[in-house]
Length: 422
Ligand code: UD1
Image (cartoon, rainbow, N blue to C red; front, top):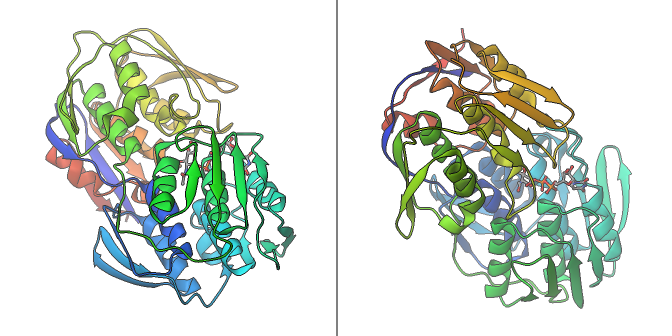
């Protein structure tokens, strides 16, 4: 196993190119199951989660050719299995994204239940309820979601009790091949959901309400779609993480290949903290602040402040003057990074789903443990400002979602090394 060693205290400078969004790449790959032609997908991030889903699709029968680490050709006309096996699904919860397309296309499938994860229970009940509303019969057998719709899925009014990103994506893909019109009420409107809608639209699927909380999808009654080439949108969470790297080290760095409107919640929060920006059409430079003020965050659905940036802003709060408050509304247990940041000397108290961070104290390097993807990136950020060395263990979490992390940070002037555990 690898670990990262970071020597803190360096000022960063220069530019970093933001990779394609993992959370867009995953539904796009799953949507290839709806597609009859040979499909080219580019700007894929070279990260473990994308490789895991590609492996699952290959297991189902998709033919995949990697043109480069960031681009593939996929042909899913001849799918031979409709069972997404535990061995692959357990590695990545987002594997649940094959449920909608498989069920819509074949009228049956089995998908292993993903199980719990470090940031909370994370059920998939809303995905299941929505498929049932579309006429599926679903049971849980031997750890698998066993779904059947012998006469195909039918359009329906699907009302999500809670906004769910992958749930909305799953139903969108199912609705694209269903019979009739599906209305998705209380749908997610994250940019990744919007990109999936646009891809389906360019394949001829009629969708109304794109970018809103209500989507209306007219299905093709089982007819497979013809997709155009796809380029994955830039990763707004990776972009936010590098903005936080500039902010925590109080350095001027430029992030390139971004869609600035996707970053508004983070840019606005960094503005409140005291940072200014220079921007061009698809790049953004964060400038050092003369003073960094404490702040308040409440995580919500897009366009609100993203839960996937909560941990990174907590690391940043340790360097801001005064007491910051961070409230997590989406995942009850998404505070695994708190005890690791405390090991570095951060002053954080946790009550329920609210963390209070008293900033302005020195952090001292220590051994810490990565616990989930975003918690791990918060530890990298904290490591950039610790006195002495910080060693981050179990970095396979980081490799799930950050492309070439140590290379990108090294290019910005950070002292960071990937080493092998003894
Ligand atoms: C996606 C993102 C993840 C992000 C999250 C919230 C991907 C691959 N992952 O995860 O990075 O942190 O959105 O922005 O895109 N819920 C239920 N029942 C369900 C489904 C969800 O109760 O069937 C709850 C969850 O426990 C959570 C909330 O709904 O409290 C939102 O979760 P959801 O949007 O579904 O997260 P994911 O799609 O898994």
